[in-house]
Amino acid sequence: MIFVTGKLYWPETLPAPSLYPALTEDVKCDVLIIGGGEAGALVSYYLKQHDVDVILVDKRRVSGGSSSANTGLLQICNDKTLTACMHSFGEQKGVRFYELTRQAVDELEKISGQLDQSPDYIRRECLYYASEPADAESLRAEYQLLKKYGFPVMYFERADIEKRFSFSKEGAIYSKGDAEFNPYKFTNGVIAHSVKKGMRVYENTEVVHQKVQDGGLLVYTNSGHTIACRRAVFATGYEAQSMKRNANAVISSSYSIVTNQVEAFTGWPHGCLIWETARPYLYIRTCPEGRVIVGGLDEPLQKQDASSLKKRDQLLAKIQE
Image 1: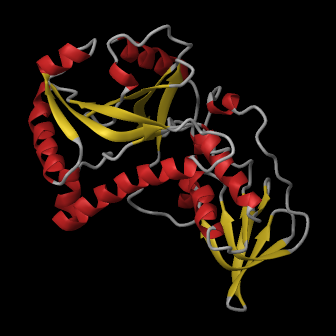
Image 2 (image 1 turned 90 degrees about the vertical axis):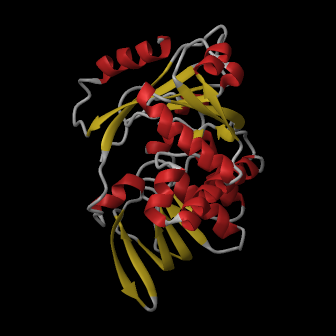
């Protein structure tokens, strides 16, 4: 699968990442992690806290998939609202899910502070606005639920938004406790942290087959060499669909741009994260270098890059709006 096209911004912020060799011999370990993105990196971090013998492989370079292109917004509230979670899973489990997302944002801050190079983790407030006036009622109900269960939120009416921001919306939830970071720096940093604790990493090493053997797994790679392990973790992100299809999973194309440096963010208090109730939604953040990242305009998976320039112009117009 081709995850990303176009010129990527995050790799430019870390021009000399650590490089790792391809596998050239048969090896053994307790746990094999397949995939060197954010998920695989975090699995390695927790396993190395317990001195597990770990090998991580990636068929490309580590952090070469979506970790090099996602926009790095870390939010407690997410695509599925607390209201929707409670309808789907029940009150207790729905609230617990949101408590875990809050815990995860905190945990990522702790891990970021342990890395040799900062991944630019910055705490941010967040504005979640009603895309259409009709969305304000359900947004207000969502606010009441979040507040009831102890999440740090306020509700802004149109006048509150106009007083603080350079635009106007019918209503919005304003929350604290979110964050932003550089996902490429983070992933490379966490993997380097695990390597210092003894993890072995092999890039350009693709798993082509595996079989159960002697109470564990024997994994075959594209080089003809094998990895014997007790357990394997498939942290392959979107590519997991090619190995074990989830009938409910839909892979779409999404678009994002990074602007040149902006002199000032007038009418944008504290560089807060911004997103909206529409689905698919627009999401906007700043960068430490004074740039703006905006993403969205999702559509069914596109095989060609022909619409990228059109999407670029549309996203730029959204920022100006």
